[in-house]
Length: 83
Image 1 (cartoon, rainbow, N blue to C red):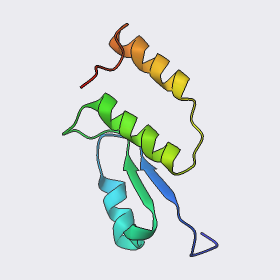
Image 2 (cartoon, rainbow, N blue to C red):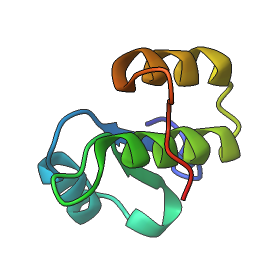
Image 3 (cartoon, rainbow, N blue to C red):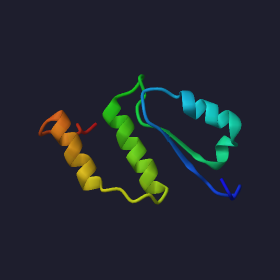
């Protein structure tokens, strides 16, 4: 990283937090956004939805319509269940 004042987004792809935890030990965690794509203790679709919201909040442009259409095709015509 060339500028130490930059905020970075770290997204771990997979069902663990190994790399995120290692990264937080090497870099000041409060200065960055740390996300995991899957959490073995939580619903995968809810976790992915939270990642999408976090990325959007951070200014990363996402194709939300495509995101939800893909989830509907995986889960069925109901898509995400409302809570």
